Image (tube, rainbow, N blue to C red; front, side):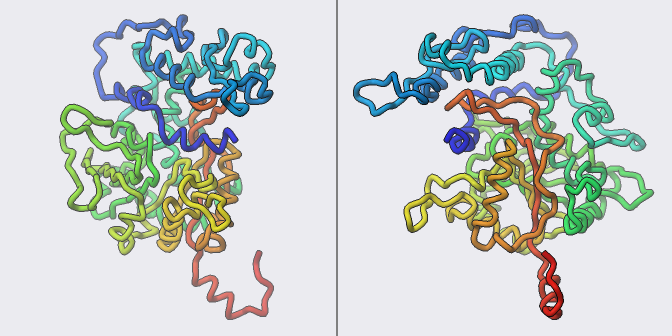
Length: 469
């Protein structure tokens, strides 16, 4: 029950959480700032936090989260309710989160110890982010040396070979992995030195051909230097990030880290979804309006913007469902230069708006107002479709949903088999509606593409032969 409610909660992130990224700007540090709280004083109950955003989050949890002991026993209820558990009001003295309705229920709940250490870790991480200390882990390196190879095996060797500041603590690792998980998940998947290979059975033979087409555009011919000058004459590589939420609010210089892995490529990122962050109008807004930002409303017909950030990176955001704008791209989509990414799209979750004839909610992958019309469009393009999930259960749920979607089941072939993502976030994300529900952004990844029809037609000519499974 709790897991089914997690995705909408993560989609509707608390507005105060976006301010975490507001200080991630290029800057020189002539002098280290004086922290508001020191590294040995990071633990605070939410109600006593020195930061208003965390006090407000604690209040939000108290409004949303039910007491787990009440929920399991229904022994303590209001007279006018029907076995509704009380909301959490008591803050655990060990982790600082509102976790139970009373001290008595906190003491009674033996299950809480399974979650307490993670919750305390998350509490201290949130206070450290706002502490005001110099965040060395957020000082991102510049272009890679031409003869310096980047390893994409895991976070540790990536940070080392890219010249990041030393990640001396697990907390720094968690912060850096959360910040970079979106661009480096993409880079670590499509790069020619990706850790997802045929030998470890994550990449399929069909997927190898699909990625070979992309990589012929992403990289220069063997022996040639990967330089910015090599972008001349090459097609732009377009990455469509559908259902974009938090990733659309990352500062562009964080996305520029993707470009550092492909010096000879010009990327155009398209963030498309109803919850995409748009630049600030004068006086307010979710993300910073950069110098060269321009409105793209006339071009795309939906609230949108475009930023030509560097010669290698252009970013466009569209606040719309992809089905509304697909017609503008469908005749130009090319498997050699275009790809789609979904970050935890919730294909397998029940739709809140669409129902079958028997009254049961449709899965979002089949919903006409959500992903139902979108997946068939993408499969028809033959471009690779990459999908992440926030837990093993989430990945399995989305993969299973493929067999239940009209015009999707039987219409795709695997590019990358489901499994862990080496560049998932290592930071626990805690759900406000139930602090026991914790996930890690982009934990897993898999990919598909539209089935090759020429293979099917050829097989039909030799129908008397045994069919491949």
